[in-house]
Each structure stands twice: as C-alpha cells, then as structure tokens.
Image (tube, rainbow, N blue to C red; front, side, top):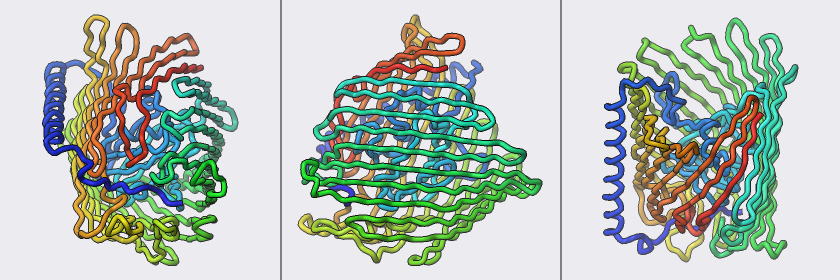
Length: 614
C-alpha cells in the first residue's frame, strides 16, 4: 500500500506572516527568559553539591557524534502512552503520530524522512523493508527498556534500543483507564535462576478519540539468558498484534481505512570472552504481516503484505591497547510477499572496522568504515571520522563527518496505482553529515549545543509537477539540511512552602531545508519540523509529583501549534513494594492539530491508572 497523502500544504493555508512574526518574537522572549533563569540558578547555587541522573544530552566515550538518550526510568516517570513516545522529547527528533498509543508513528531526525532513520535493538538493526511506517512496530513493552539512544548514524540518524538485563528479580504491574473507553493492563516478571528470564505483557484498547481511530493491541516479550564460564547466551522473543482504524493515514480521499499488523521478532546471541578480545554473534529474524483495508466496510478492498528480515551479525572487539578496534561482519536478507507489490528479495553482505583511539587524556578520535554489497546496487560505502576534546572537567567540544547511504524500500520500488507510481530504477540515496558541538556540565546544571549540516544526493521522494499529476518516486537533486539544537537541564531543588521545583529541562531545535532544484512538488523530503521548543518541569506540590510537558512546534509546510501535557502521581512505598496512582491530562490545552497533514490528533484526553512494584 502507499504511504501518505500530500504533505506539502499550499502556502495560502499558512498563518499570516504578521502572526508568525509575532509568535517568533514571543518565543524568542521565552527562550531568553528561560536562559536567564538557568543562568541565575547556576550562579546563585553553584556551591550546592547535587548528584545528577543521566542527563538527556550525553556523549560517547570517544568520537564526535551527538547522542541524545532517554532512560527507562525517565519514560516511566512521564507515564507515556508508549515507550517510543519518549523519543519525541529529544532534540532534533520528530515523531509524527498517525495513531495514538504508539499504534503508528513516523520517526525523523534533523529534517529527514521517516525512511532515513535506522532502528536497532541492542545494536542489531531491524528495519521494515516494505515501508518505514512500520519501523516502530517493535514487540517490546515499557518494562523491557533500559534506555534509547539517538545518534547521527545511518543516512540521517539512528535509534538504538537497549533492553534491560533479564537478571533482576521483581514484579511490576499496571492498569490504565480513561476517556473514550480507554483501558489497559501490563505486567513484567523477572525470575533469576540458572536461566535468567523475564516475561512481559502489555494490552491497551480504546474507542475513537477521533473518528475511525479505534484501536487494540497486545505486546508480549520473553528474555532468556544463561551465563557460563566466559560465555553468555541470550535470546529475545517478541510478539505484537495491532488492530486499528486508520483514518486518513494514507489518503484523505479514504477516511475509513483499517489496518491489522502482526510482528514476530527473535534474536539470539552468544557473547564470548578471550584473552585476545571478545566476540558477540547474533542470529535474528523479524516477520511483519500487514492487512490493509481501504474501506473498512468493504473487505474486498484489502491488500496483504508479509515481510521477512533475517540474518547474522558479528562483532569482534580487540583489547583496549589496540585502540578500541572493532571488526564487524553482517549477512542479511529482506523478503516481501505482497498482493500489490509482488514477491521480491535482496541479499547483502557487509564488513566493517572501527577504531576509537584516545590520543591523550583530553583528545579522543573515532574512525570507521563499512562496505555493503547488494546484487543490484553493487558496493555501497559508509565511513566516518569524529573527534572530541575535553577543554576542562566542565567543557567538551566535538565534531564529526559521516558519509552514508540508504536503499529504497519495496514500496518505493514496486508500488503502483492510478495516483502513485513507484520506480524500479531508483538509485541509493547518499548523504554527507557534518556536526560540531559544545557541552557544559557543572554540578546541577548541564547544557549542550550542536550545529549540523546534511548534504543529500539522490534523495528519494514522491514528487509531481502539477496537482493533477500522479505522485512518482524519483531521485531528487541535491538537498541540504542544516540547523542547530540547544538542550539544557537544571536540578535546583528549590522549595517554597509546599511547592518544590525538582528539575527543569529545556530544548530548542531549528532545521532548514534548502533544495537545489526547482519545478516539482515534494511529498515527504521537504516537509520538515522547522522549529520546536520543549519545556519540561518536574515539581512537587504538597507531597504530589506534578510534571508538565510543554511543546511549541512550527512546520515548514504544515501547522504551528502548542501542546501541553500534565501528569500527577504519588508513590506509596512499603518494605518490599510500592503503589503509585497517577492522573494525567494529555493536550490539556485542547489544541486541534495534525502532525501528518490531514491526520487529526486527539483533543484533551483525561487518563488515570495505578502502578504496583515488588
């Protein structure tokens, strides 16, 4: 099936220029005010020793790639509808929701399309070869997540989901209720023993908050691990089933779309240690089934798609005295069997080498190269160079360069109908990514700023010359994306009566798309999130935890909108257990907006629940 409607909205549908100018002035004033408050706290409380949790802005131990991370604890504290929603709070990330509660979302980074961000689980890449719309169909629960890391890997960015070690003993469960007949249950049980294991389950369903957006999904996972002398065996099984109304997901002309997806994932690994280094081998399989109905009251309009991603992943790490050398080998295969796209497959082999030498106590480098071979596209090269320098204990600077590629999906290659035409002659798209950053951390205050430039060649997009023409997939000319990101966190621990300001997190991102060719309309590649402000406030009021998430977004060819969320909770702890009821209001401002053109997001939604932990 095809993936979306036209996302380039006519300029006359935008706000007036005077309104935009006044909004930008107000946002600039807000930015300066927040920066002044942070600076005031920094100067007035600098002598107070405070231990920080892992901050949102983080850096690799070596190399110059920006890394934004969110931990499982931070996701849990926000009481998010799905763990993937946590990515939307990181600078440069744009998670464009199509369905609520993680039903479906398009993930982009620094102005990329949803196809250009790699998704990996514990370092093993799992990308849907049919379409990037399904890359976030990940059969894991919130209880399985240790952290999620976003870096500048891949064509534009990459997300690595790090799972929790299954060795921890404990049990946690939760319930969820809310408007629109919302209900949900989840549990996770850790059972250490000779075989370390954890089993988790999550279920949620609701009626339509927006017409034809009802949903129900089930996710289950099982982790097994066995530790032997110098060897560790581990296996992950995951299953997920989603059934949902897909109002205008792929075309505004068909608002009664319906979709059913099923995802099965298996990953098994062997981690061995030797005097000469360590070796990690993984075998993996991901199967994704999609039943798409164009008109949910007419089953005859259904399309069926099944994809397989499977392969072998190996990494050999030399001892530290060999400058952090890592050698990699990958062999994989993508397959699709589709009632619309037909049957296709592609096999690839890849070899890679990475070095992370620390030249001095302050200067570190990161060097790497990789060659992938495909039967149709031949050899495709990726390489990178990064460096970081510690000016002192508080300030670090870094920079990097990366050359990457991406192959077209099966939809881009083979889809065809009266309004959309794929192209089997597509070339691989390429990009050169440049980045420079500055990080500061001192006690309870931390901040960072990054500037970036991505020069894209042969970028793949659906385009047309006139609105009466069908959309056709093509390789564009050159498009440059550039911008900057700022992120800061402060933990002042200010108290006034029964009020406590525990923590505040502020970020700002700005992205510009500069295409070098004219004369066409773009469906995806130029529809970017131009500006976003995010302010999170974690406070206490008379013993309650009161958390606010406020965001302001401006899209180049879409809407400008403010969304606010409120979460109130209270944890009651016993000797070996805790109980935490919570109450939340998503979109308390009741903003009417769309992140994807025509896909209307829910208004104010009141929810409540209970968490139990042993």
